[in-house]
Length: 277
Image 1 (spheres, rainbow, N blue to C red):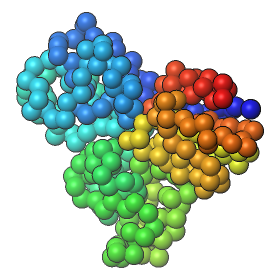
Image 2 (image 1 turned 180 degrees about the vertical axis):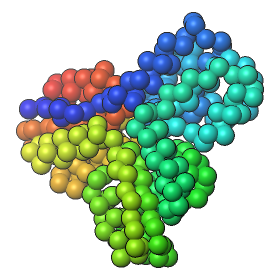
Image 3 (image 1 turned 90 degrees about the horizontal axis):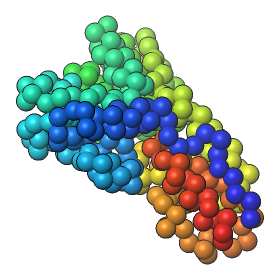
Image 4 (image 1 turned 90 degrees about the vertical axis):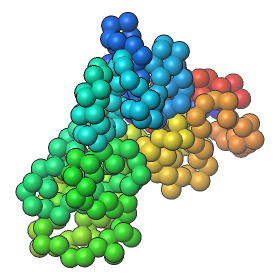
């Protein structure tokens, strides 16, 4: 059985940077060292960091001293102010691409645009961008949400970094008739685009696709959706332990891709297990 891993898969720059900052804090910065929410959406990596003494907390109320790490998805700027008031050491591991989206959102509000954020309204990244806009924004998940919007004189758009470019295009096209002026910041991360293209191309050629990554990872779920559109035999797994032998009956070519928060050791293990089938 042929097994091929997508050319663009696994850790992106933002994730690698966040994990590097977290590991560098151990033994150097005040303890306890905590991340505000999981630093990335991968349970196995979160458990690995816990073994190094870095634990995840849901709120600043759970920590009164030590170091707090702002995760790659970013936070409401008020959270940083509160952390400073508590005297906590702060490590800002917000992905640079997410920071760009935050700053673009604030800029559009300052310039008088009615802000539309394209993304998942309950995702921590989108919640953070919304906060940077002072709460003066509308979150649109897809083109269906556009029907509920009023007409605007000026519309500004930013987008969640892991959104498919196709979704952004559809939203823009639906908004054009509703406004006289539109300004768009395409804040989709370049790594996301490359991963999605590579995954789609591989899914078209493979008999079966495995998408590896956290079930709570938005970008991994998106890869699963993209692969499933062209290959119904697509399975989203977190680790090799979820692989079922019956999936591979009559399968000669297996494609593997992985989300931006999936470490290489998990991807390699999945490939190893599949090759042994």
